[in-house]
Image 1 (cartoon, rainbow, N blue to C red):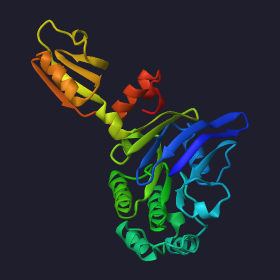
Image 2: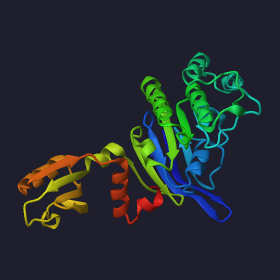
Image 3: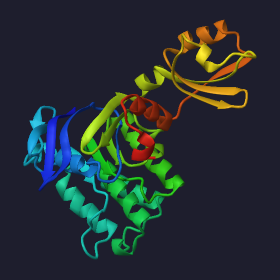
Length: 299
């Protein structure tokens, strides 16, 4: 388990990470969402021991990360801008990574390079941005660490490769309890993979919740009400948002599905249905209640 307590990092007068508290459980995908400059990369660099916190702590299973080789051997960090040795090939990077990570799976790495159509003998400097991202993920997966930290990993990947990378994460989560921590400015990239999401803004976490818990307590209802009735008349519903399109009313409502359905039936609408909310819609509703307009932050 990774735990941050009052984690703070400053660069001169800029507070990049501001007293962040977060818990990342093993075996789950943690998505760190936020705009550029929100503090995502700084948080990951402290989590990986590259930067030392100015205040607070970040620990893995109770041990500080900074200047702790034993703890650092348990994770693989993929930065937003990958660095490879000048004129290096994937084959040479495999040799390097194998020297650092004793459990590195060389055979699987070569198999994945073939699957992703990456030539192990070609100079990485000739690779495209997307190809470099693919290589970084393959090396990270094959390091067989407990955690993998990914900074904007899906940025630059086409939709097919995005799904391929997500499949790799899912496979290793199932087989060896890998815990990916993925930072991104794009909610859509993480919607189908994350179990827990934290929203980072101006160095602080606005909210941090399990997606399942969030989805269970908020729903979208589309309905056509009886003539003369408006959404405002449905007083027992805890409405977060109401939209009208002609006779069709769309409401975002808090509460359990069973409670909402029972109330809707009691109002005897001409038609109604429950529709799943997207991750964007859930975050919009959560942050609007807290006084933030997430649409201006990350959409």
